[in-house]
Image 1 (cartoon, rainbow, N blue to C red):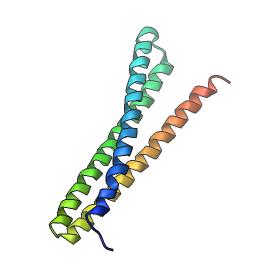
Image 2: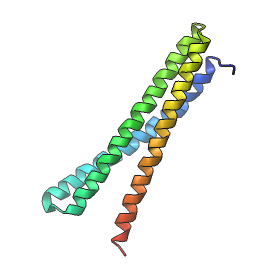
Image 3: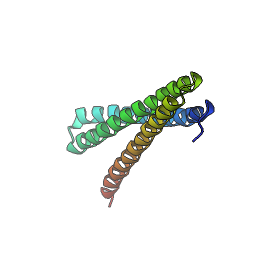
Image 4: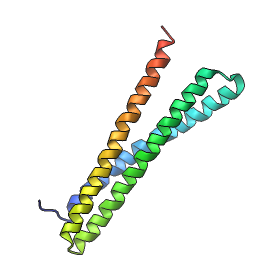
Length: 128
């Protein structure tokens, strides 16, 4: 496989957009947790506490998604440095590591989305 300086550079825009989406998810969940926490303080409703615990799991997943995304970008930069220095084998290994980190981040995203959908289903069941 031929690898050039532009190959890891292709990940930059994809990872940047993913990190933006992850950050938006995180901020939305943080606001929701604050709101639910205030409501729980007033009523001590067990359902609200359960929702907060679900959101805590999701926030933890999003944190890990972000860390892996940032790590992937970081390793991509090192890959470019290695390629620039003529260390092709090292560059290929670093590029592979970057892709694996990105895949794990995306896998965690799928899990987080599934948890979110399950929580919405529970919420909708109350309406039935």
